[in-house]
Image (cartoon, rainbow, N blue to C red; front, side, top):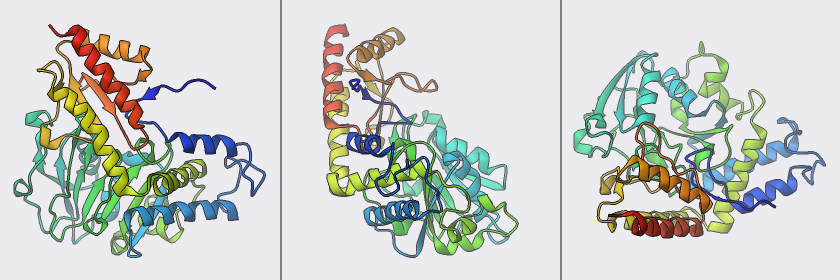
Length: 365
């Protein structure tokens, strides 16, 4: 078998090796059906058991009560940028509030503005999205349909440690890049959505956790596929579901429950991994400069710069030679980005840490 590199891609991202091994073992034929997961009907008994198990796992991991629906949709978070305002805006709530902390929250606003009046209540653009707002900086309109924010910005490497205060306004969160990285108080949210390919599965499925009372805002004149209420009533099976992607989400959530031991333990491991890299940044005498302010640093995406573009290119090239891949920063920020999602093993972060120290020692003036 080809040796695997340590893949620091921001997404589609690394998956747990035990999950990949199980998928490989069963891909030709599931024991129950003697057919591949790629071939079985989304209406059949086997797949209905798979999607039910995936939902049960998510409910257990996040302690999701019965007052919330769990949906498995398609279209990625980009479709949710439109579905959220489509479904939550109504005559009583004609506008919504947005917090802009980086590229993804800006993208969500752009789509929302096509559907209604969107109010920017905080924008970190003047600081190049290096920090996050305190609650005192957020003046939420109590009549807003929702308050939208992105809890982890992959490109800029900033991450909320706790939920912004929204009062009685439903809090809507794009959690695509840190979903399941730690426990969250789900009752604080109206909607949490996340495309799977960064932290909870492969590309192709988007998980939406929505408070059931908000389903009543979904208007009958919406296209059926874009209607949360219709999707919930159909159990996410209104159309052919992304069967393979949901199957892998079920495997990833099994891994989190049975091998990791739940989200508290996953969070402790994630903090340990991030600290390894940030400690190198902080001890480098300015050779490595983190993008985010220390109190806003992401546990999932460690973004930093080197003294020059030439050294950055050299760093990325030499890292790849040591099987440390996909470390180039996003074009809008530059530098280096190490995405250390749940499935990145501690050994991979240790290897990157040691490479960073050697590279700094060899190249610092």
